[in-house]
Image (cartoon, rainbow, N blue to C red; front, side):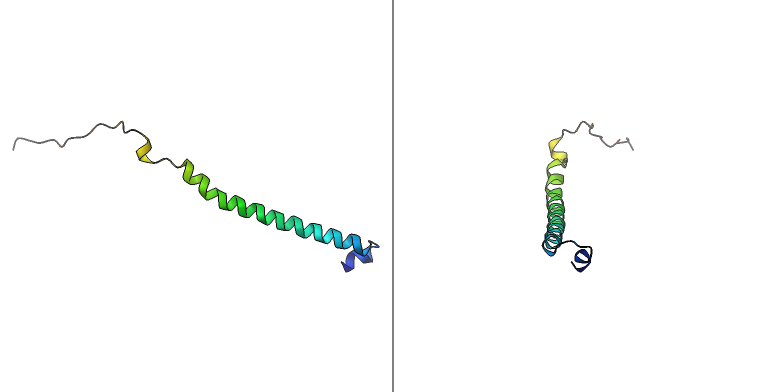
Length: 67
């Protein structure tokens, strides 16, 4: 705040600016934390498992020779 008051900004306004800057940084960190926390649950809901889709492959039988 000392640099702001040296530029003839009132102390109350310098205090308000510094508090708003701190609140903005805190909000950005909280938003990033929510994004990081919800990313894991979105991935597990979208994941495709083999049990949800039918298998269209034909069964392969081994070739038996008459030896």
